Length: 267
Image 1 (cartoon, rainbow, N blue to C red):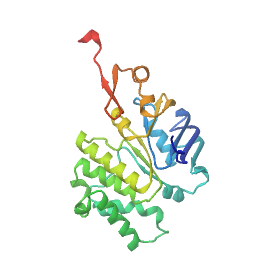
Image 2 (cartoon, helix red, strand yellow; image 1 turned 180 degrees about the vertical axis):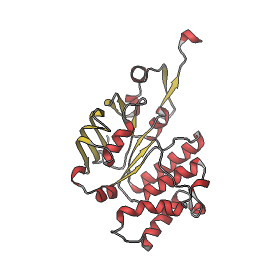
Image 3 (tube, one colour; image 1 turned 90 degrees about the vertical axis):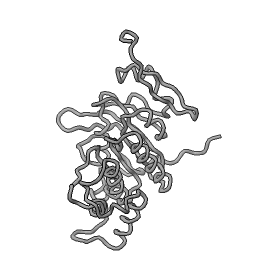
Image 4 (spheres, rainbow, N blue to C red; image 1 turned 120 degrees about the horizontal axis):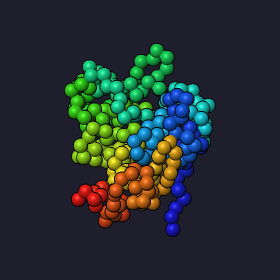
C-alpha cells in the first residue's frame, strides 16, 4: 500500500514561452512534487531550457506557473528569487572572482537595498562550501578551477539562496562521467537532507532515469510524455522523438538504461 504523495511544489498550466514572435514552448503543463526530483528531457531544440527560464521569470510567458499554489506573476522579482534558485547551463564565471565572493552573490535576494552581508550570510556561505567540499578552495579565483570544481561553485551559489525549489539546466555539462556522477550524488544527498524540490534538464537519458523520480519528455515545444522513467523511456517513443535506434534495458534495481544500436544496414 503506497502512502499519500507529497504536495505539489511546482505546477505549470498551459504555459507558452519564448524569445520573439514565435514561442519556443506551447501549452506545457507539468507538476513537480515537493522534495522530489523531476527531470525534463527531450531532443535538442525541444524547449527544455525555455521551460526552466519561464519558471524563473527570465523569458516572457503565457499561462500559469504556481509555486506552492501561488501564481508567480503576483510575486515581486526579489521574492521570486527567494523561492526559486536557478543555474543556467553555461553561467558567466568572472575569472578573477574568488569562490567565496562568487557564492556570496547568491545571498543577494535576502539583502536589503545597499545592505552588506551579515555574519549569518557568511555562515550560510561557509556551510555551502563545506557541504560541497569547496572549503579549501574558498580563496581561489574561479579562473583556476577545473570543470567539476566550477560546477560545484555554481551549485553552491544556488544553494545559499536557501530556496525550496532548484532549477538546474544541464548541471553536468562538460563533466566526465566520474565528475558528473559525483555532482549528481551530492545534489541528490542535499535534496534528501533539505527536502528541496529539484527540477533539472538532462541530455543523458540513462542518468535522468537513475536520479529523477519522474520525467517529462518534450518535443517541438510540447509535452509528449510524463511519468516514472520506466514508463516514459520506451524504445518506440525514443525512436519517434529522437529519431534514434536504441534499446532500453533495465538494471538490477529497475532503472532503464538507454543503449544506442547501430542500424543493421551499416553493420
